[in-house]
Length: 305
Image 1 (cartoon, one colour):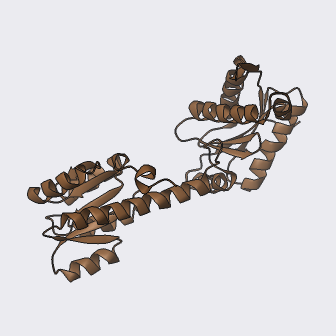
Image 2 (cartoon, helix red, strand yellow; image 1 turned 180 degrees about the vertical axis):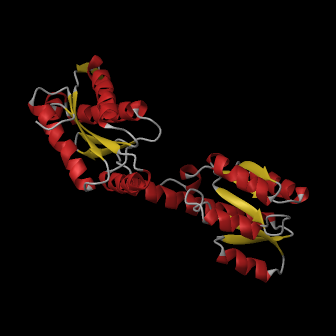
Image 3 (cartoon, helix red, strand yellow; image 1 turned 180 degrees about the horizontal axis):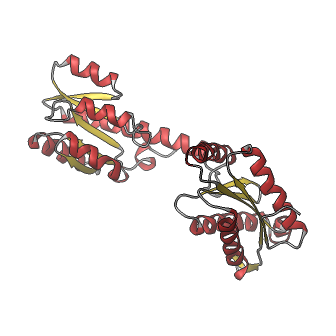
């Protein structure tokens, strides 16, 4: 069984120390860096709030008493930000300041350490919360990701489409869906073996991730089927991407254990504009994929027959 150190090695973790007293920072920095943690530093609350969204540390050691923006307010703002709220915060407080401790827990801190520091205790608390946070992240990721391809699974993708549908209703910008399928995939498994089929799925997934924009989302819908969510994209743009991917897939055979495997893909395209249910939009793309498969394969279909 893997140890916690192997699952979550210190050099993969970043800790931010936020304190307006340089001596405190140096003591904590030396102790934690000696274990192997990556350390970043902010000298006040304002600096911390500017750096945290960019650095996204794995844990924050946050002094309560600071000028201008104190630690309580910094923590409160972090917990109001959906992208930052899961970063664990350990407060640094003077010994005996129970009011600070209670207020810290109220705004979302996971723990506290007292000044003057007991460095063994500091390191133990930091390690505990880093491992716990990393384990929770892994559990969440495992529930959202397809284990073979590393793409979003069907359930997670449906949530992302629902979020995009709400955004479309606010900004009146439609999104499109590419529904893709590997042609004759059963024949690949039957001819070259299931290990080859898995290898093809993995390589196709990497190609889809490479060709998409940063804002696009890719999922393994099931079996050899893939869905690509294209925000703020009309049918024409979706067809262009579908054809680009289709041409890349068919350009040269995939190689598995010195065997050349010719691959093609077919795509169906649909657009969501806010006036139809999401399920109907997905179903429409699926129907157009069916048309692409039945009219010769290795093509993109964006209109009903």
